[in-house]
Length: 158
Image (cartoon, rainbow, N blue to C red):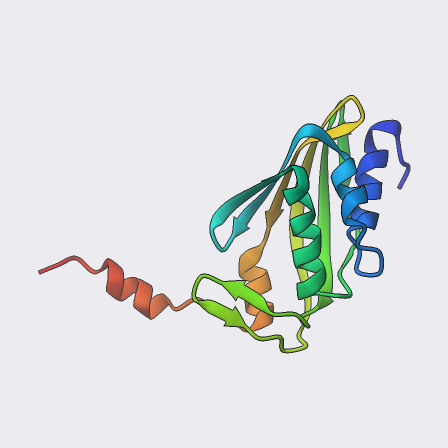
């Protein structure tokens, strides 16, 4: 991939969040003072991180998948907007906290797609929207939805 000035920060961001690097402060420093990372599609639907919280995502992913690796596929640049198709790969070796409790690690290998949209301003990340295919991730972890309970809960009262 040819790196242009507008995408250099993004390439550094991915490198800083790799399992063998995990440079939390370096990742935070790539964002504008009011920069935000929106994790979209997670357990709660959407979570937003700002300031020092930006590092929480790097730490969480590093604990969940200590060997986390991302491979940048299609990279599309339009001015200060960059869209990237990037799978996240790793081994499930850390606990996964959910609203219902903790899922213990199984050693499962994961390889799930994400679509990342980066909005830059003056060489810094203003907004990073990370769309994760959690249904694919959950299936690879063996965490399948309980459709029967959902159907029962939505049944109209008689």
